[in-house]
Length: 257
Image (tube, rainbow, N blue to C red; front, side, top):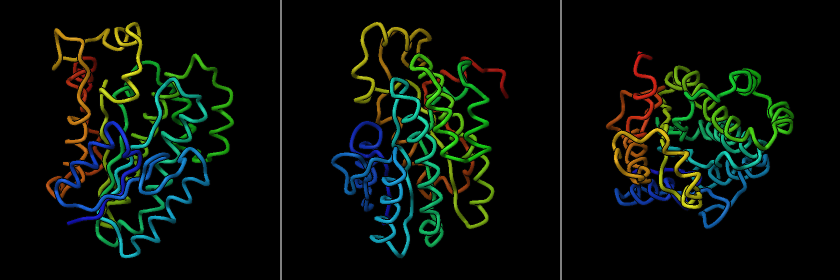
């Protein structure tokens, strides 16, 4: 059985991933800001560095997989959105890459199906992915007004998806795979706090597989896809962003391919 490191594995999608992996007999090391096997605030440089060092100390012989799931939603300040949704994910992936290389492992990162929506700011995406300078990214985030939170969120996830695509050929040279899962609206502790008005707005375009209801997707549906991509069964999949959104992206962008 394998060794898997999961970030943001205490609740929601991450918790389901941990449950499924442990159910298959794998060892799971959960990094989260509360109730994790290692507690760290991954929105800070210190938290990211401490988490990387903790994994290196515990698993010097390597790990089989990294599930990068920690993130915040569009209501958070833009600084935290950029720091956690983009920088933490990419820095931890690169920091743990040597341990993944030892076991020819893989990485699966949680994006969002909002990466293709109209509010994505491509200039912000370009800054995040091309400059790769956290200090400059934080400077930009501090200038983003609170009402632009949804755009900051979607842009951070779009940048993450682009980074995955760009990194995948280089990772493959070391025998590694890296992919992303882009969930749609999912029932998690984050979305359970929505007001009725917010929920109706989120379902303005109905989820095709939930048509006729006001239901979101289940966290288990997203976790199943993540666990699959992290398994040997997905050995031929690299650099892909798998939309697990009940068909929303296909509905909105049916002519993209």
